[in-house]
Image 1 (tube, rainbow, N blue to C red):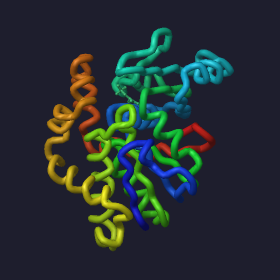
Image 2: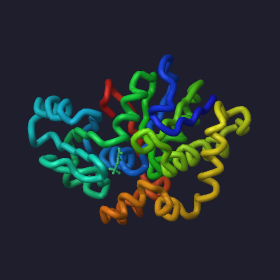
Image 3: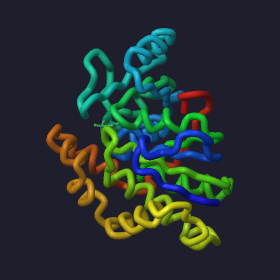
Length: 241
Ligand code: 3SL
């Protein structure tokens, strides 16, 4: 297995897709996706375009769907949900499909959607993703951070590092054998430095600060937890996890 970390969708190579690609948007899209599926949601369908989301979701019975939309951290008007994982309770999401569009996370998913296997990872479901990699041993794995509008984000790279760190610890592979690019090593270093205070890292991160201004402290606290959900969001058909 060779791991590659890309900080943003924009820095991810185009062309030949890998065996396995993992989208990461810790704050908050992939944390929300993992939470919806762990709470009994039927599936999550991701869109980068809001118009397209509305058009496709209208073909579903209203009692079987939920629409979640976020732009700039705030909920999109007219949608039932924004992008807070804490809103995705079993009572609300059980048996329903979540149609979601967010600023960066759904774009990261779209960027890797042609890979043989597409996963969504956050800190809260890191162990499930690592277990999948250890069991299946895909030859090439890309971990793609969502960043913020094309720029690096601390929390996504820390999560990429959390995944890579755990794979190194649990596999027979050395870091040298595993790392496909330098970004893997720097992601592990970032995670190792902050692993006991991931909430503290979020407070330093520009998107963490943006969400704090929007009074989303509880979301940050929730998303900073590691390995609390045993759920593996995997693409079943194009754009549907
Ligand atoms: O950019 C995204 O995709 C989001 O997850 C941003 S937010 O956390 O909902 O503000």
